[in-house]
Image 1 (cartoon, rainbow, N blue to C red):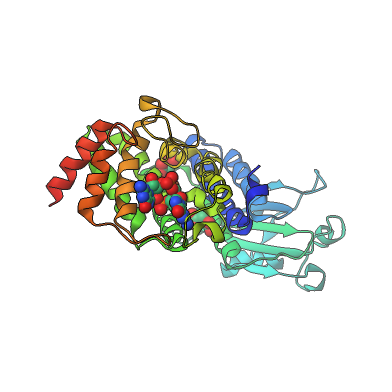
Image 2: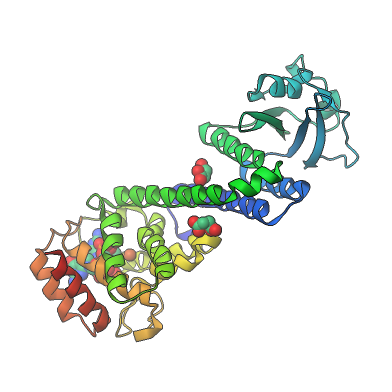
Length: 377
Ligand code: C2E
Ligand code: SIN
Ligand code: SIN
Ligand code: FE
Ligand code: FE
């Protein structure tokens, strides 16, 4: 349904892909937190790697310091289920070199690689390209992650970076004792990384929308102030923050000639524009940790009197977060230049919002908004 309507499908797909990658990191994180069994964790990670990196097979060797060799642990995507390998000495073959030299090695054409010793992987499995990454945690070699493809790897910087990120995440799995210790701080870092990523998207969206710089940040700040003023609980604020940052994510699905039109929209164009909350819902609902943040992207154009879109919700049917956000968004939109009109003054924007209490906006939210604006002066 989405795809047919999208001219910006490339951008849309890229965003989907990024969202899925972040979800993959999160899945592995959950596996690490919830499981003590190294093989369970690794299998979840390998599954994500095959899906996200578009490769055919992947395996992990763990390093055994006891006999200084690499032992085959888990695999996915190999044709031969019985496929097995003897322990490999450090420095032996490519995988041994990845471990010994502690650096990633890629081979774009395995058939031409002389130091490749596992000929069966080329003959029976038909692999063409290869990427081996050392698993290192706190300076200790833990093993090697290998990915294989039966066609050339079309890797780019983002692909490599993501593989290295996954390897880094897997590397914290093998040592459970250390794992428990570091879990709290790792979670904090992950959470920070998520939120930095969201801010990055919000910034990118503003750029495309030619919105005045910082629209998303500003509108997020104002939304949070109103929410606090209305007594919204702290644990809900994090989701409101994410939802506000991503409120117009769905505009990625709106073609430039509509989004950037320096004039009024035609009826047809308006029909397309009105889909942006639904696009946002479709994109973001796949991401578990963003699901509680969906109210704003999905419902920010609903109106108190039921005349909004996409569902025509009325009054308290509209989630509170979206009712709050609507006031902040319209205030910031009106006081900013748009391709189709100049900015209004702050005073006329405030007057407008007062006049829309009970029509576009929840009157309680308008009251809280007016108090916040007064305090700011
Ligand atoms: P936006 O520019 O971010 O505007 C967000 C909301 O602020 C609008 O939602 C509307 O409720 C309010 N708003 C913005 N500008 C005005 C204004 O000049 N007068 C009034 N009374 N309210 C205003 P809405 O209407 O659902 O529009 C959603 C999005 O559709 C807008 O986001 C903008 O991207 C686009 N859009 C709306 N009207 C036009 C238009 O005439 N031309 C173009 N090119 N785009 C438009
Ligand atoms: C990516 O999208 O490249 C990886 C995801 C992330 O950096 O969190
Ligand atoms: C999570 O548990 O989803 C990661 C932390 C966060 O919500 O950012
Ligand atoms: Fe919008
Ligand atoms: Fe906006």
